[in-house]
Image 1 (cartoon, helix red, strand yellow):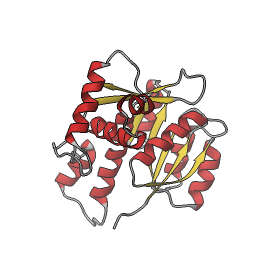
Image 2 (cartoon, one colour):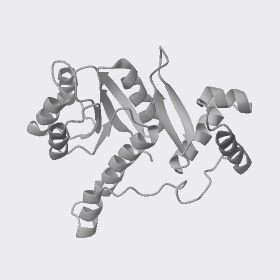
Image 3 (tube, rainbow, N blue to C red):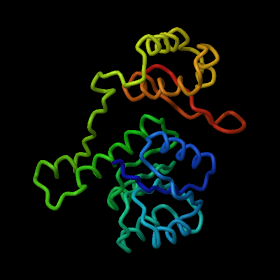
Image 4 (cartoon, one colour):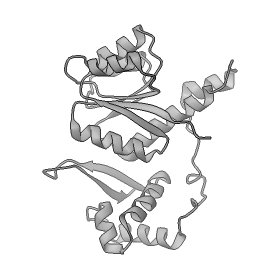
Length: 229
């Protein structure tokens, strides 16, 4: 039986918060319990609600990401944290790592990199689940954050995917490499539904054949762009 993993997003930029939410939902195992625009509101929520994972920005009003990390540690709040931030100062990164963040993502980031960070968290969580004591091998896996390969990376075509359709989309991206591709544009060109295109693109991302990135220069809601790696 699948266990729901409870997560919150702490981000003062509504567009970035929405992207984080969309990315996390694509991972399939998470319930997003709240989105907070400052660290103080997030801290008050963490004090009274069990949360497994926090997606945390660094620069925020009232209580910053660094301050929130310190309070989480000081108050022994049991949650994992992935930093998603524009902060690149060495001392900021160093403090975040010393305070035990699972991973540190610098904006802008791709879905592939976000997925890698979340899978790292899931790997650690699964290793520790229902374990009373550990041996050296388990500690080594935790310390080195080894992420198990997905079925896609092991060369198995996921159930429900068709090799002919997969090859077509791969070839389309190769032949139109100079263009900017969105799920919608590929759907229009191929005649496939957006849901189908997104499913195949996710597979190509997971198998390290396609890269995704965020386009903020739209004048409105940011969009996800895709290209062959």
